[in-house]
Image (cartoon, rainbow, N blue to C red; front, top):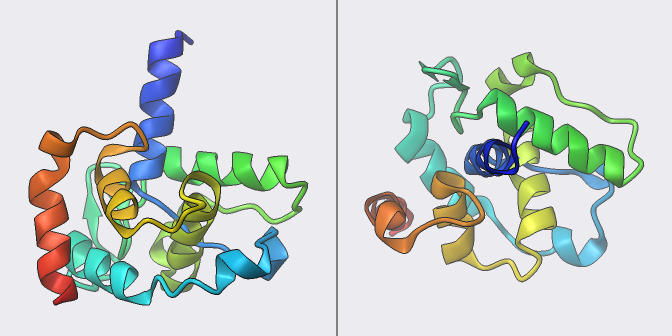
Length: 143
């Protein structure tokens, strides 16, 4: 696989982010940030809260892609956790939120809300211009 293709796959994985719990290796300071308003807004923008939503390869309340599931499992493996996510976990609201939080804990250690929103849509190397509409939609849902 070329480096560009690999980067595209990783970027897409981050777009459909994830959450984590203590058993998946989160540190206390990572769990203390309240992502609830951001997650709730993303859920409304992505699926209007429908856990059975499907759009192409994206599924569930947070429209998680297979690439995101693979990226979450890669992070868990790096953290030496035995926990793993399956494709069916995308339809589970709790596990979808865990995957979002896992992605944030790995790529967004500063807990930057703008970064979290834009990266969920455009990957960790997002373009501000390309993610602007999505960012504004999520902000409107937060207000």
